[in-house]
Image 1 (cartoon, rainbow, N blue to C red):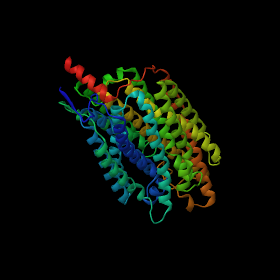
Image 2: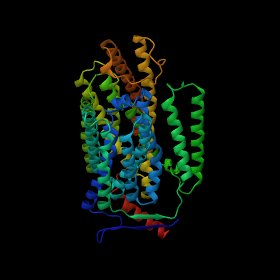
Image 3: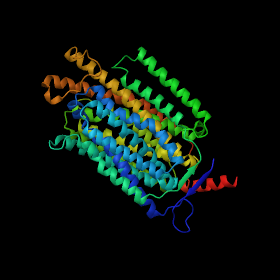
Image 4: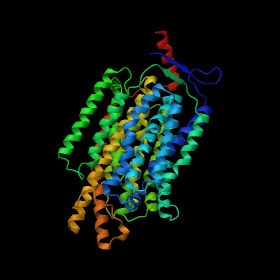
Length: 525
């Protein structure tokens, strides 16, 4: 295998070095791209009940609209990460933004729930690229020691996108001359602007490696993961958990993933190098990221539905109710990042963050249809502070402890398992929610239309008689609280994983500088 690097840089700069001004300019394009991905994910949160209702979808359709994007993103993240170690990162992130634009346009023009779900695949593939590549590029141009404060900015962008998304989505749904379709159109100009901004500001080494991408391994990983996620999405309402369908899908998924492991162990450039997991830091941060995905995404994705169907709030108000959690995330992410860069100490931040996340989820497990909004906001602040201290810093710790040539693979591995955990959490807990709601409503109202299956239609509270509406509110309140009670013990395991991490000093060289040194050492050897 031969490797060569060419790059534009300032005179007398070390290979792979970018000045502060160059870094900030490049970061602006990256942040714009990430803002697009976050906005598109959050802008539909408060609109989903209305979208699914207008397109004639069911409760299972509601879950699928969320799950499909997560599934596509999850399945493609490892491939994006590996490609970033082999090819031009700038071109790849622009390509991912282009796919995102296509998916958004198709979603905006969708005339039925099936086309909407299909469009989410393209959005998910694009989001997979953005998820993996933005963090890889940040690590390439900034040292781990300095990355903390930039991660704080990253967290701020995440918070702004998350705050703006539900509010904008709610306003659009509540504005008759706009409507929910603009939730998807809104991100298109931002994505195009990000592509142009990255073209002008991002200058990276061009890495050329004479290797073949392991597309067979990538296909097997995507097929195996997708099979298991399809099973977790459908089990419990399309067929029983203990049915032959379960045996067939789980069996097929396990066999396909076993084949993927075999292929990955034989090829020269695997998509997910198994040797990477011999690194204790990578293994533990990957496990923690997976558990964070299951616990956090599995519980919080249904909060908007709780606000609207249990508390009876409008989409706009539902967006405002999410502010406490995002405020907590914004503040803790920014302050934690600055402190880590200043002191070089990171383990205490991860331990405290994982503990607060667990407590926050447990507190949210006490909510119901009559929960006081001030109390609810306080619980969400605790959860947001915990997540802000934890999620981005797990990636930083892993990036600090791998070779520069494996930065893309290591980063995408954590993103992959976090997204996988989120997909499993949303799918499994979505099925639990649907079935629990039906069971609770059936207790009060008798057998429901359609046989009381978990995929029953999402109700429109405004059209229901008040006694029936009260039953629906109570059912969604109790069922949602149970999701958080399931998530809290899972989050508790994150504390255990973080506790076993060994504290290592943060490196002071950027990924590009480390890669240049590694390449020179390989040439000498």
